[in-house]
Each structure stands twice: as structure tokens, then as C-alpha cells.
Length: 194
Image 1 (cartoon, helix red, strand yellow):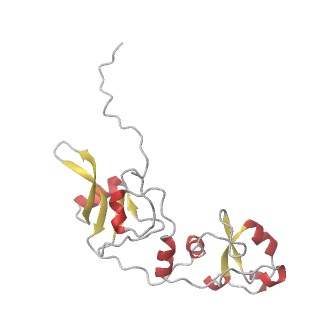
Image 2: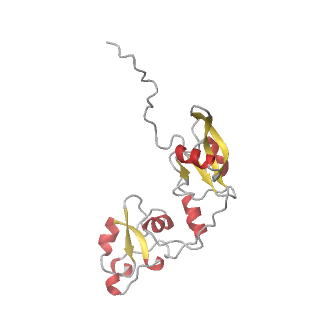
């Protein structure tokens, strides 16, 4: 029996990032590289209608209402400049980004934890200059000792990174999806799929 109901208006599921918009500051630089500053298509359309952003580039895809048709933004620029942070927050993510997601003892990549170079039990503090990314194997091998006491050496001396250093470190990790309209605003050496 035919129901007579229309079902072609039901949207099929799509990738979360399929129509994301790259967000640029008012100076046309991305707000962030890692993670890349993106807005969902819904938020980018809303921001454009509220005149909070300028649409720089658009997708071919459109959204429609009964009275208007609107191409989805692929790149938007904020109308008001957002001042970049002057100092870097001491977070696990920023620590891993500073150390490029590599163990600072053996250089391996993958599942990371963090290690106090001077253990806290020996007066070590949880600060940029005393904490490094470490793989579980090196972290367990080091335990409650100094690196020199267990034949481990740091690959580089831990220091507090500047905002620019973290920004540059983030450029080394392009996302798995880059739209062709974004490439003029990003500075990765990544090949785009045709």
C-alpha cells in the first residue's frame, strides 16, 4: 500500500565537517591552527545573518527558507579583531603541542602522558620548565627518579612556549580535511584531493 507521504525532504546523514566554515580573525589569519578554527554550517549562516562575520568564500551548496536561498559559507572573517592571547595556558594539550606529540625521552609518537622531569616527590613543580610529554614506557621506566639516574636524556630542554611557537607547532599538524577554498588562508604543505 502506498502511503502518499513525501519522504524526499528527510536529510541523509553527512560528515560533521562537510560544510564547516574556516574562521579567520579580522586580519584574515585563522584564529587557531590546531585545532583549526571552524564553525558548523549552521553557526556560520547564523553569524553571517547577524553580521558578526564577513563571508569570504562560499560552497556550491545552498540552504533555503520559504523566502530566501543562501549559499553556505566556506570561509568567514570576524568583523571585530580578537586579540591573540599574550601568554600560553599551561594545559595538557598545549604541552603535547609544544612537544609535537612526541616522547621527549625516546622520540616515539602515539599515546602520550606527561612526566615531571624533577619528580614532585623531590620538590619538582608542575610548570612548563619541569613537565614534558612522555610515552608510558619511558614514564614507567623513569618512575620517581631524575632522568640521569635511569639513563634517560631529554631531547630538548622544556621551556614555556610563546603563543607564536604554539601556533607554528600547530601548523605541522594539518587536519584530515581541507577544503580548497581554505588553502589561501592556511600555510601547510598539504596536498589537496581533487
